[in-house]
Length: 559
Image (tube, rainbow, N blue to C red):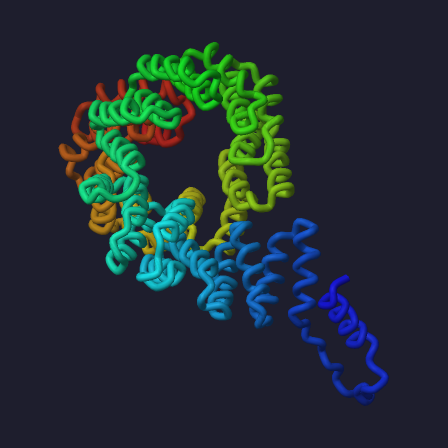
């Protein structure tokens, strides 16, 4: 037993039993209430963590951090809360840690990541600058570390803005430029990504190979697949390597040239031997093209490979499930261990159980994952909420989403999910409040603006506000079928039938979804094209006989 624990035990024995050198209160006087100190909360937190009571452990460690001047307590509290997804507690602990150790880069870096999550760009950029230290003393490796840390955050647009702010006040740095370009590519800001890469190349700085690979990816994202592939092939011919050959093959596949991708991989196999990376990509391309037997053989050859075994089992399970071999799929999924494929595997097992009608087992599967892997608990809760909604158990689904938002109040995706559920439950004011909160947190999010605007258009008379929001979403992402559908629907609600028809027809071309068919058919009906509307609905219903929006629309028009 360490000194700290021993001291705490003695202190509590004294408090409980009294002390011979101290006279207790006189009879009738109120008894003093012991106030637990930091040591007590540390012990309680550790016990809770050992027993899997993560929420309790997070709260107890936070209590320690806020009572103890030792920065180690704040470091522990922040790290534990962050690891388990308790963002609000992690932010409080990290701020305490930075207060106690203002020059500690790890504290500042953690704060930067947490502030990116809540889209506080100015705050995140300030913390990132503090993590890097004085501009004149920074090295390229410092920027590379920062980029790696921030790349783990899902808010790619926010990360891009943070790094761009840093660049404005930092000496020229190829590593920082590369980080900006990579983040811009992830966020869809292709102009910024391309200009940044070309500027670094023109200056003759940075890793030329990495820059040219990144530029090829930007060109591919732009739809310039021939130029992207040609550039990579030229690079691979000049500097042959396994990594570049895999990059070329992957880009050929992404450019819808699978035959050339497989030819390139066959040549790589002759050049490098039975490299697992080559076999993996061969199997992936084969699966994508429907050559399932070749894909199965390729993945099966990786079933004992330390790096690729779990992915191989997961993809083999996909093939088995597609061929209705569910028992084999379940066995493969059950063999997947800890790592990035664990949760998708267990969620797939749960979905198979749900599809078979055993919803109770499906939920128990998810519960076991959360119990055994508390760091995945919030991800599991989101999946659990979605399943409960499919089962029409909306109150339970709402409780799951409420629990997530208690600890992650700035999670816009969960706010939107809860808003959609509340709307379905006819709690419109609460639904709109959640959607508005998501838009305030992420004002540049096309997804948030679209969800809020569509709901306003569909359920309220606030049509002008709805149109502004959906137009903003459309300007951000004009190729997203859901957003195009929303814009068409808003126009319809404003009685602009011809324009609505055009946008809804485009949305249906992009994505022939039954709800889009319901919207397009309704506009056609209002325009007098009733036979065409009926035919559209009938065709959509044949493909999606359980689509409630489609069924509701047809019922309203007597079909």
